[in-house]
Length: 98
Image 1: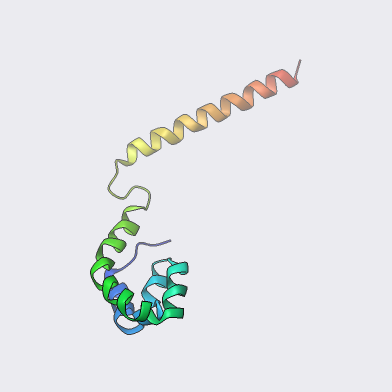
Image 2: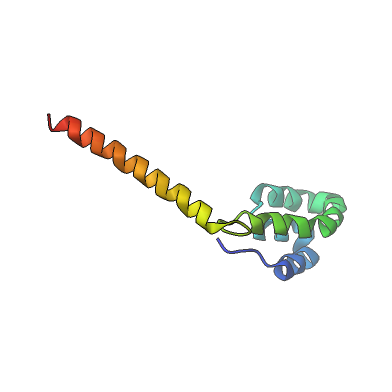
């Protein structure tokens, strides 16, 4: 999944927001369906999203691995997991050869 564009999200909000177009784009399918069925919460939800959309997009974009984090720390955790998993496989292999 790619990072979400604020320009695309706001364009979808403006033209298809009453039908949840921007929510579908952001991956919020359930909310998008609710907005589609209620015509943007009778317009109220559509107006609220005008102010909340920036924070929603920032939160989604921050959730991608490595975004705003020290990537080296993530790699260290992955290496530790591999070592633990390899050790567990070696123990099983050793017990099976007895």
